[in-house]
Image (cartoon, rainbow, N blue to C red):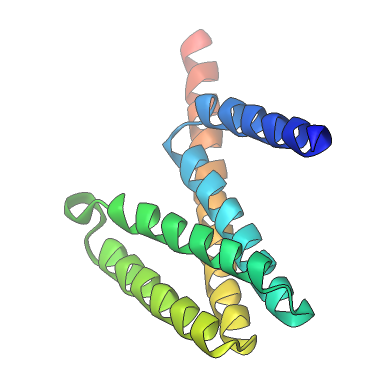
Length: 141
């Protein structure tokens, strides 16, 4: 029991550190990482018959998808934001159906789609960071 509490406290402290030190791109990247981990836990829980782990992963994944969808800026994002909203809605429906039917394949489909978006987001974030670093160097010179 004490070990579990210590691990939980460590994980919460690590998350707080990551969130406090992150910019907007970093926060979304954290959400994508957590979403992928939650979907993987759901899938693995279902595969191993651990329905409690499946349910916990599903609950967390749905919460993260809600946060991602709620954070979309349709004025600035336009078509991209609309496409992401459709992806998040599809992901939510697919996860709910997979959980209800206890089927693994839909979790894999959502994992694949979310992983592609997460990879693209990481690339954008890295490009933004490189542009800021270049600008800082130019200003220093």
